[in-house]
Amino acid sequence: MSNELIDFTLVSVALLGIGIYGLAVKRNFIRMLFAIEIIINAANLNLVAFGRFLPHSGGQTLALFSIAIAAAEVAIGLSLIIVAYRMYQNIDIEDFRSLKG
Amino acid sequence: MADIAFLALAVITIGSAIAALEMRSLIYGSIALMGSLGGIAGFFLLLDAPFVALFQLAVYVGSIAVLILFTVMLVKRELIFKKIEDKRRKFAGIGLMLILMASLGAIFIDSGIKTITTDEPPVDFRDIGIDFVTYYWPALILMGLILAGTVTGALVLARRVDEEDEQRTN
Image (tube, rainbow over all chains, first blue to last red; front, top):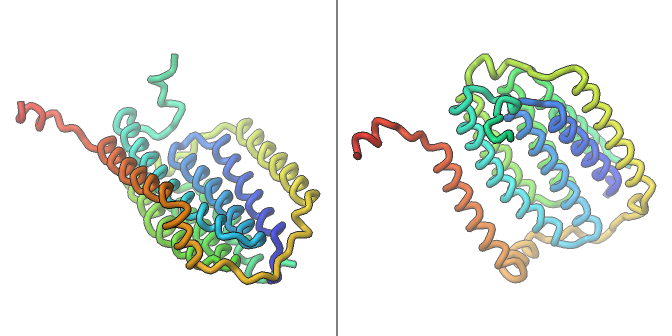
């Protein structure tokens, strides 16, 4: 196998950085959801890569659990977007201030 | 050293992750996100995990990306193309990203990860199935319940409550 563990880890670090950037800068609700997806995928890549190189089946099992939980999270997030859009007619998170004290 | 397939997949994945966040239109952004998730599936294939790669394709590229596309279509047209961000926050975000990448990358390169190599055969996906029904069975059942609960919750949240209907039933 010509690819090494460090290569996969560096790709994962790059994806994590891009995701953090998206969460910090974007104010669009849907784009923040994109950023969360990218971060979750970076974590899954790390799980499978370490599971391959140890080698242990636990990495792939945990990655499958993580994918399923991420699917649930996206379903809830998108329905929250729809509810918020119906209430405020906007998807800018700085407009969602009814819980602000 | 990394081979050509790895480099191509890295370029596709990271490039379309940036495009997903930076493209002007949310629709093109979600298609770019689909490309990025597909690139991750390619990495799983390179890591000899075809089962996880197919799961990733089915769940992420197949269903989540389509769900996001439909949600984007429900939003007003001006909001899809509107880009709201201030310059200072953007530069601070880029700085944060670069600092994070440099420090985490330096930590990983400096640690002993570089010396880890393996000649052993990859994990058979039968082992994953056996894991699921023996050691992880409570977690599997819990995950099914959580999925059912969240999907029902999402349905209840997104349901439109029509006032006319309520009056009619009253």
